[in-house]
Length: 104
Image (cartoon, rainbow, N blue to C red; front, side):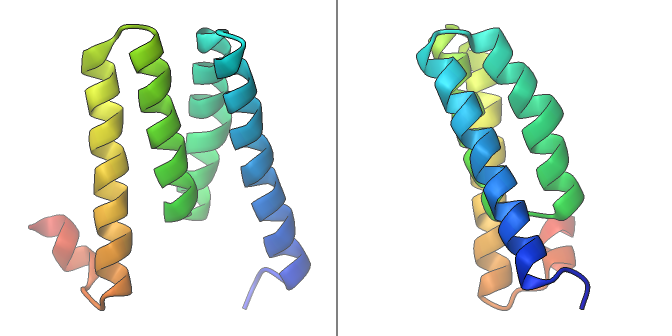
């Protein structure tokens, strides 16, 4: 089965730590730092782990950072990725085959 309960807890704690760190830098108006952590630490890690929930939160936060930077095009792209992840997560929860969903 792979990861133990302790491993899953560690992963969740890391996910939450990354989100909290990015939120901190966003609130400090250090948007470049927040984006760097979002992209290099958060999004890459979430993709490696296939963590839809974590990706969802990261893309949403990334969109808000781009809004703060007055980069509406990048914000729209991040929010679209957020919505795509939500749709994928919801479709897999509802029994729809992910591969079929992605190929449509």
